[in-house]
Length: 283
Image 1 (cartoon, rainbow, N blue to C red):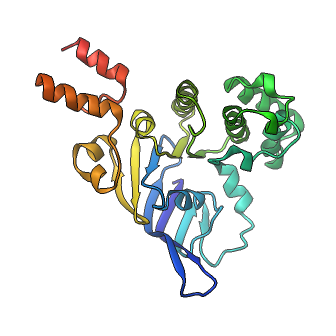
Image 2: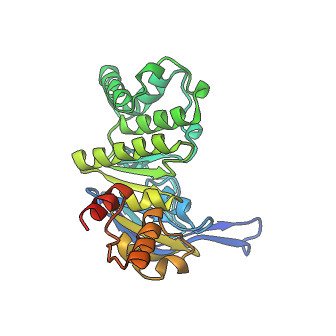
């Protein structure tokens, strides 16, 4: 088991207790610790960010219970001495990378996590060099994180999480601020890491193209509740995506056009344009 939500709700209270805003409500969700690549989708305000911020106890539930590996998080445990252990197991890459960068140099920023979780300085340095090589940012190591472009900052933020080797990695809009080439490179890297290490990835995304190409499982939030949890193909085969204010990925719109125009029967199992072109070549 990795992360288990049991009837979890989170409310924001105003100055008067009767002024209550629901963020998430009655959430039941299980994320396995291995081999998951889950996309959390839904329109703005549906509760996606609140949901994932509970996954490493950045936020605590108003009601319900969350099991994060061997640790129980409940509304009563506001001061939990195990939070550091939880955050070692579940890493969180923020939507805005500047929120998690604070050191003088890129290298120090990437080394901070491993050192904080008990690595020696030598081990932290080796791990930092390894992930900088992986993310192609080694030439940035002596620069200030705040003098980088948005795309570079995002890579540094990702490196700072990968460096301490969490079992589950949560990504809040991982392609935000990246050009299409950079977005593909980052997502291909996550896919490669997931396939090699069998870690689980959970990502919030508004990009249905990214979701459809990379996610193995889709969780849809609408009006603060989970309205769908399952296969991405089934989500778009039926009208579920319309009911939840989602748009079809580009590749599916093209498949619909080809099927209608040429009387083909191309499957939605073609997740990318490259896969679709291979299918067309074989027709």
